[in-house]
Image 1: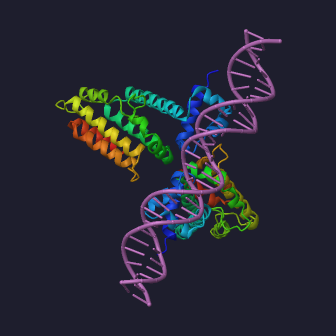
Image 2: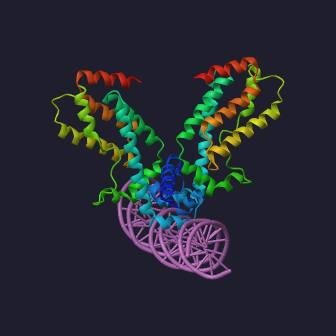
Image 3: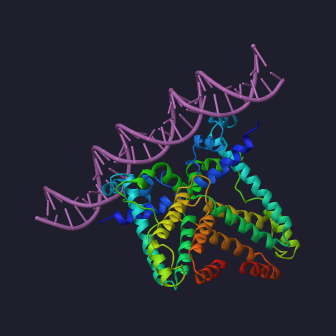
Length: 200
Length: 200
DNA sequence: AATGAGAAAACTTATTTAGTTTACAAAGTT
DNA sequence: AACTTTGTAAACTAAATAAGTTTTCTCATT
């Protein structure tokens, strides 16, 4: 039987709720009702398990994003749904998880293999393209540069929220930051949509 | 200078956000900008610090309770405010904190000295008394027994939320449990008030 | 019967962290 | 100016904790 997926999913939940260091391999095994040995059969060590967990989280997020993106009437709606999701996500993520990521696993994110990526950082160019087509973003913006900028905003938000430097940046700050940047590249129609959604 | 209070308050915040074990004495000292030595000047060991923190939390809670109680138009309003407060409190409390409490400091709560008590468990009899006076709770209930029952409900809620046995009892469940018990001891007027507040 | 997959638990070893000790610096006091 | 106090900084020790390993046992499948 292939335990890999089961292990990853339970580990993901536990890491996110308790933090990484707080979850011992014995604990995880206990929760899964399997032996520790079996975990080590599938993952070389805890770091490899963590990588698996992060990769899976990223994939799941990407899926959700795609779903939101396809189910939304316009880009602005999609973005607000996205921000909501991110907010929930961050709220349910233990600060301990974030701290542990920062303390012990920063290297992973600087990893030259680039196996692990920042969540929420992909598919920005899609969003811009669609926004322009819908007449929500200005036609005269440089898609390439704007893409890079949005990536930076997202990355920075991640740095500050997933790895808070201790002066925690609340999700509201992130939200406002992101929204104001969006306003800057929007047409009149876009601005109206943003205002409409922002009220709720 | 007396650092005691400063230390307790910072420790309280850190314990609640990261969990107890995750917060090392070095970390705490670093956050406070003081030396670890100074902490040990005031507290014999980490356990004593934790006791100080819990005691302080309890006192702060008791104060807030008193304030809510005195500022409310009727008992039902007070209880709803109380439940709200408890909800927020639990939401901002790291599961790691709860886990650590359970794993390492259960003894404290069984402590014969009784220095540390369950939070939220006092002043129930006051509530009942006032409720009867206001015609919200039935006159025919046995104040003593009801008091014991409400204490049990509160204690159980604490057991399950502050020390979740892993099948986590959500604050909604606790809320519903508590409210339904209240309904059982309420007059018609009380029921109406409960329904009124519950809608929001 | 033989193989293999995993449980259970004891074990080793590395790391972490509580708690101590030392050396030192600034500030106030005599 | 010497002395005392109060605290910092950092190195240290010793205990505990948790990662990872090994062994033994069991049960299911071929």
